[in-house]
Amino acid sequence: MSQVQIMSVVGSAVPAPLRELGLLACWYLVQDGEPVSGPLTSLPAAQALSNISMPAGCLPKATEPSAWFR
Image (cartoon, rainbow, N blue to C red):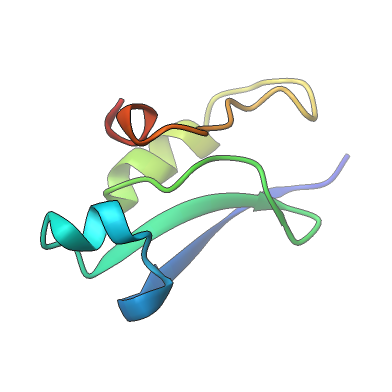
């Protein structure tokens, strides 16, 4: 089973809605080089989500901006 890793992005790689809120960085969970979560607004949120035990492919994918802040 592949390990889920945390990837950070900064600057122009941050989605525009988050940049408009003044965020200069965000985090994604990635597995096998592919994002498995939407952008998360803090490293602790990414760490918490990465520690949840879920079967492969079952991590929530955020597709709408409202899901980024859950």
